[in-house]
Amino acid sequence: MKDFQNKVVVVTGAGAGIGRATALAFAREGAHVVAAERNPERANDVAEAASALGPAAIGVTCDIGSDEGLPKLRAAALEKFGRINILMNNVGLVITGSFLDISPEDWRKSYDINVVAPVRAIQLMLPDILERGEGHIINVASTAALYPYNTDRMPYNASKAAFVNFSESLAMELAPKNVGVTLLMPGPTRTSIAADIVTVTPNLPMMPPELPTLQAEQLGDMVIKAVRDGRFFLPSHAEVHSIVAERGNNPEAFLKAATQRFLDRQGRGEGTVIR
Image (cartoon, rainbow, N blue to C red; front, top):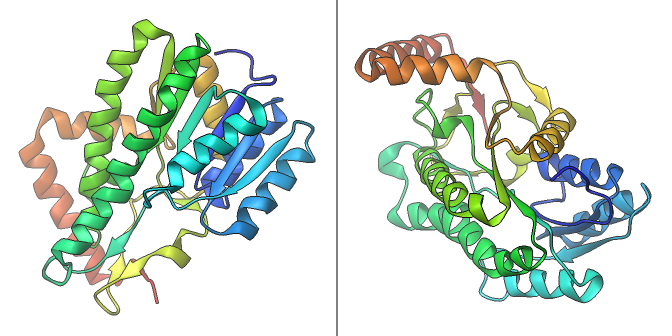
């Protein structure tokens, strides 16, 4: 998809960070934005910011984990604009804690939000996208899904890894139907996600990947280019390519080295405690 003028883009988790930055990036390209967010003020705020750039936009209060949230979102998009061209699945649930402190219910919640909800969103809105004859789906996973560098958020890492596998298969199925898939793999990015993180082990530092921190706007611009180029794999940091290649070449040696780096970083007191 080369031209975004008058296309309709549905973005979940659009109220802040990568979702907001990408929604506004599409608006600057002339697309109409449907900004979905649990917080109504944030949903309306990003919609107003997108509308100020030219195209019409709406904010939709939406809990993607509820039974009625995603059907309500789809209905709002179709009622306002009559079509859906692009869907961005950006919501993610992060639960941190030591393995034995994280309950099976926490694991279920993580998979419900990070895998099942976006799958439901695609199943609901893909027929609308196919109806247009061309479209795109953007799935947001994480660098944490590609290689180990922490142990503090296993449900998030594992669910996002499942989302990567799903996205690869989805891209294969949709390729002959003229619908592209882009898998965004954010590394360290300045967002407001810390406010939404659930911590079950007090004072446990979250260990980020050893990569520089980017601004959310940089990722929004990356997404625009990737969709335009029909690109599937989109890590936010170029270094990820060589790291993943190293892991694939010798997984045993990679894990041993990653474990030692993790222990060394723990010893130096690295990481961020979310309170």
